[in-house]
Image (cartoon, rainbow, N blue to C red; front, side, top):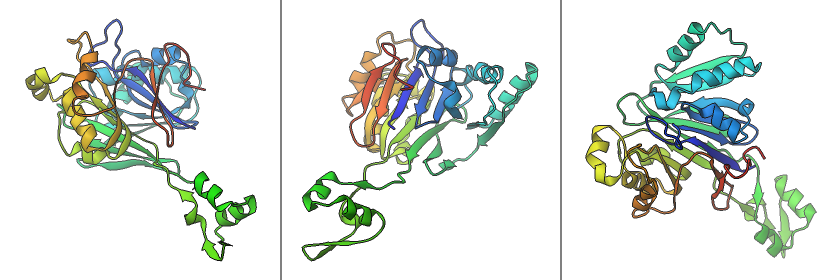
Length: 320
């Protein structure tokens, strides 16, 4: 199954009439991962046909309101809908007390387990490592403790090269022998599985939230298929970006280039800019391809083909 990233919101600080605060859902199979949960996130999920019940992991970048104010409503909705499966939440120090205070002050008796893990590491740390994927949290440079996340697939099956299978004229029985670890002989030459295997690049996604530019960030990320990187400001406002510990579109493009990203996705635009197309135009002077995160945009990450961009505002394809 292809990975699918749906953008719930990608504006900074406050919502506008057509731009919502940060929130994303990454579908990696049956399960989904929610990355940040700004105000209105669960309403966007309803709008785009996203199954909230499939979200078993939530990754929070930092404790600024535009990244967490949608979380209390979502957790309460899960309780009211009778959720019983565990929910795993990762975030910086403070996420645990924030959730516990919300549960206590609203007098909700939550019926499902909430497992909260606070991240305090000053270097990258593996927070999820299972048979399907690993997730690494890495520190960013913002005004408060902030983390980015890299999610990388583990390939657990063998992939065969159709070209090699055809060239060698292998039968189904030959392939079965090779897949079971055996060897065959063709024109008196021995062949094993390694002679017909192909090794596709694992699907991967990196999320770089609020941060000042720093060169080492690329080392934490790359190489990566799809990179989301905040671009709160344009290069013309570099001084403001530096002062507020944010990045410009040019700096996001530099990180994508150094991280050997396949595709760059910009977001977290300041509301001072009415036309966000200029962010793409600025970044493309340094790196291509570049896309703009907008509510309802879906980015499909296949195993080998190019990343595809769809619009959920036109059709609900996320859950298909």
